[in-house]
Image (cartoon, rainbow, N blue to C red; front, side, top):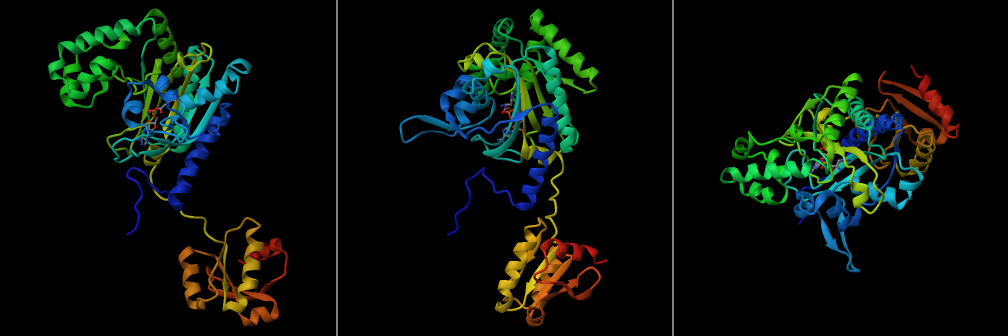
Length: 422
Ligand code: HAM
């Protein structure tokens, strides 16, 4: 019996891989223009890194993490996200001291054991960016501009950026109490999950998708109305700076995010083409995180996009593979060595050259050339081997060019000779 892949884990075949590479390349171009340097992070980290940052009571850590005991007894996990790893790397490398203001980005697979559905997988890819060491509103505004510019470069359709402020250590505790008190007053109307959230993570009562919970929370107090002066001023400045740069934001006072490290600015990016999971990216400010991970009290803000969701948002048409310039058609095993050597030399110029099996008949080889859209077929039969000159069939003009080049010509001049065929 064939072995299937694990639920929620998928293969990316060539056409899709090309599309994904184009998305990452487009994002990379924008990140570089904003001065971000790329960091490669490990896929495995200590579990504690995520429980201390993302939050021990968050769904990600509590229910979705692939955590296991290593052979030496250490508890490790496949990373569910990149921010905690990046901050750990920033501290490990001594950047907090040497270069506290840093713009760093990363990409690659993340792992969460969620229920798979359209746009939601157990292994997915992110493009994430973190701006460390700056607490001023201008850093938030620059980050939101970067988000909008990446979406534009990738060709995301129907992008919307929703923002909220989640307050800080000065104003959130009092708000949290108010929200909990409200939640208790409607707790009979809440779903089982929300009753647990009420005690452990009351902010998450606000973004439950359950209709009954939504109705019950309709009149709940909102963080945005309970910000301290510092948070209120910061938020107003972010909004006005972003507006002056020409990026549109939408206020969403019920957006809370599923990770615990956020304070002040939080945002989510939505787009067309998604199923029930419509966020293609999300992020926010996390001023306490560096200290929580054992570093100095330095602020940070960042975001991550999901590559699979960006694919859906920018059209999932498969890009065509690169079309071969030529296909080499060796006729019989005697032609195999010359064909292999010629293909290798031509491929070293960087052109795509297909090489057919010497055991297939010429007719079948021609059919294949048509199928892959090759412009030329280079035929190597007995006559060609004897004369040392290839016959080139131009598939566009349906015409043969006998002796177009000698088999031992320089690869560049062969490519040039093909390029000269009208
Ligand atoms: P997040 O909102 O958990 O944030 O994930 C960011 C994006 O990753 C989501 O908007 C979504 O596009 C994608 N994503 C998440 N889970 C899945 C899944 N199961 N399948 C497919 N795509 C998924 C973070 O991870 C934060 N680290 C972002 C951040 C960076 N905040 C500050 N800096």
